[in-house]
Length: 303
View 1: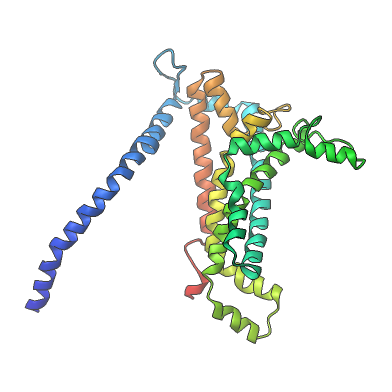
View 2 (view 1 turned 120 degrees about the vertical axis):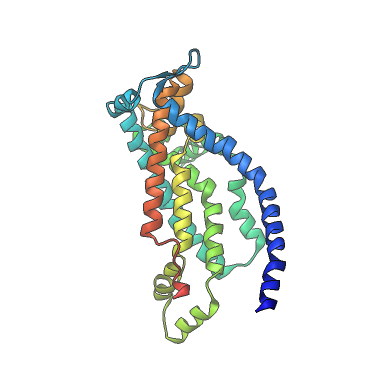
């Protein structure tokens, strides 16, 4: 017993030293968190209860901004437009990334191929939007020129109300597909090989192995992918700003673009802050529901 007390007292200073070292490394991140996340969030929540246009000090108006938002048809339309973008973006991207990750695992281990898959993600969003805007241009774009050459009608990808948002969603699917694929690919690599060998011995086919083993064991990774994809999809802005500017007829005016217009187009920062707070609440609620429904913290490997 005395020896144990001696061990405890000897390790206590070491633990304190480790704690101080850990805090020293955490200080830069903590300063960044407080300066670029916590303070702007608190300031934004405060401004959402004020009328503020940069030229005069904020004036407290209570819930007036939120009442005005409730009766704003452009706001509700922006939520519908954003939801359309999120559904197309997440649905296509997740399924395509899952298929591509399985193909990568089954048929190649080449780092070159993985690098090529990730290549679009290394290009800036604005550059990607500009390239696809030129490619899909109605008069001069390569895509419409090709359609015209083979006898099809030209398509107004960005000028048609029904096609504008799906086109923007697919452009961003193209850019982010490689990153999502590599996340799922990493999850596939973590599944023990002996599980597949046992399924093969039992005579399980490809489809039964995929739906009975691969998908359930990938659930924590897929939950993580869905959450970060959802949060990123709700923040769509640059592609819209470069290609359509919210048109035609509000068909691509997503919530983030509407917030930008109210803040920097009309200098109505109080109203824009109130919409930002609503967006933050929506994102937090949806992410929490996703994590609970998909049981992101549980893995079937631990059972």
